[in-house]
Length: 365
Ligand code: SF4
Ligand code: SF4
Image (cartoon, rainbow, N blue to C red):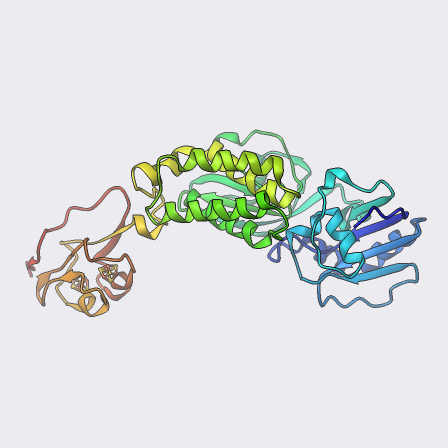
C-alpha cells in the first residue's frame, strides 16, 4: 500500500490485552467526551477504531467509527495496522511506528481525554489486582507499594509494547509506563514458564509477514518448550540471544522486535534461573512438571492403598498396611496420586528430595 496523503486523525480504542481493556473501559465511561474532543479536530477525516462487536450510538457526523476485526491484539498499537482497519482490512502492520505518515495523527483514548496518569491492569501474584492509576514515570517500587506481592516478591513483567522483566534488584529504576498490563511475580513463579507463556502469546499475535519476527518467535517458543521438557542444551541461551538480536534488527514491526526484547530482558534479569533448568535440570519454583518429582513421606503414609488405584502408570509400589513408594523410573509426574492421598503423605519436590524408603516396608501402626 502506498502512502495516503490525507490529513486524518485516528483514535484507537482496541486494547492490546483482552484481560486489560483499559482503552475500552475509558471509551465506555467517557464516550461523549471522547467524541466531542475528536469533533473539535480540524481534519479531513476522523476515525475511531473500536473492538469487534462494540456497539456505538449517536456518532456525530464527521467521525467514522470502524469496527476492528478482533476484540483485542498487539497489532492495534501499530499505526500502519490501524490505517488498514480504516480501509476495512485486517490489522496487519506493514511498517514500524518509526516510519509513519506525517499527515496522519494517531492518538490513544487516554491522549484524547488528556489523562496525565497511566491506567494499568495489574495481574499475576499481586495482592491488589485490577485497574490501578499510576504515574507515567514511575518505579517498580512505587508500583509494588500500590499492589503488593502475595509471596516473596521476585519481579515484574511489563506487557506489550514494553516487553520487559525487572527483578527485585531493579526496584528503584525509573521507567516510562506505556503498557496496559503488569504482572507481579513472586517466589512461586518460574521465570522459564512465565517467559514461555509470554513468547507463546507473541507467536500467536505474529501475522506471519516477516521471517525474523514470525519464524524467530516460533523458534524461541520451540527452544523454550524443549527446556521445560528437560531437553535443554548448554548452547540454548546463547542461541536464543543471537536469534533475538537478529529479530530486533530485522523484524518488520514492533511485535517481532518486542518478542526479542522480552527474551533478552529475561536473560539479562534471570539468567541463572533459566540456566538452572538446563544445566542442573532443576525448577526452583517447582512449576515445570518435568522437573518435579513425587514422593511418599514415610511418617505420613498409613498404607491405605488409595494412591495405587489412582496411578495409571503402576508406578506406586506397596500393599495395605505398608508404607508405599513411588518408582521414579515409572512415574510420569501426572500428579494424580497427590490428589488421591487423603493423608497428605504425597509431596512434590524440586532440587531437594525428601528421604524415603527404597521399597515398601510395614507401617508402624
Ligand atoms: S501414600 Fe497416601 S494414599 Fe498412598 S497408601 Fe500412603 S496414605 Fe494411602
Ligand atoms: S505422579 Fe502420576 S505417575 Fe507418578 S506416581 Fe503419582 S499417579 Fe503415578
